[in-house]
Structures are given as C-alpha cells and as structure tokens.
Image 1 (tube, one colour):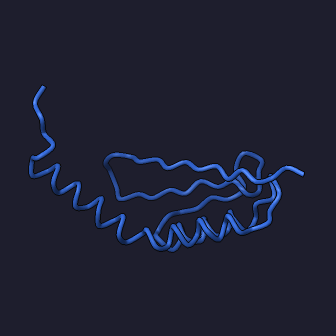
Image 2 (cartoon, one colour):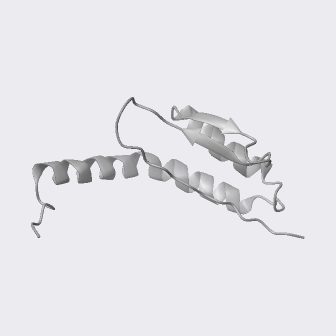
Length: 97
C-alpha cells in the first residue's frame, strides 16, 4: 500500500484542518464551558441548545430546531454546492432529577 501522507494534497488538507482548529478553538471551548456551567435538566437543555444553534447560524449553517419531537434537538446544515458531506453529531446529556 502506497503512503500518500506527504503528498501536496495531504499537506494542504492538514493546513486547512490546522487553520480551522485555530479559528474555532476559542469559541468552541467557551461554548463548552458555558454549557457545563448551566443548571439544566434532561430534555430541558434550552440554553445549551440555543448557544450551539446560534453559533452555528453565525457560521453560516441553516438550523432547524425542534426536530424528532424534542424542542431542544436541532439539525444544522451547511452547503457549498456539490461535494462531500460531513456530519457532526452531538448529544448533551444533563441530569435527570
């Protein structure tokens, strides 16, 4: 099997990934810390859902909220025409009291 890890395309991809990491790391860390500080019960993660969906909308995603019968669930979609599709899935599990 041939090693393509040092090709021009692979190096360019690593650069794009590193630049994206540097760009989004501060915001995503801040959002993560905010979510962990929130005192929300299971299936009532309204503030957490709003933090994430607002960030994604600011970054150009189309956000559909209230899916699958859950007011806090959402789908965020980003499109740049034809090409590969990348999916990111997250679940916020809060306390059940």
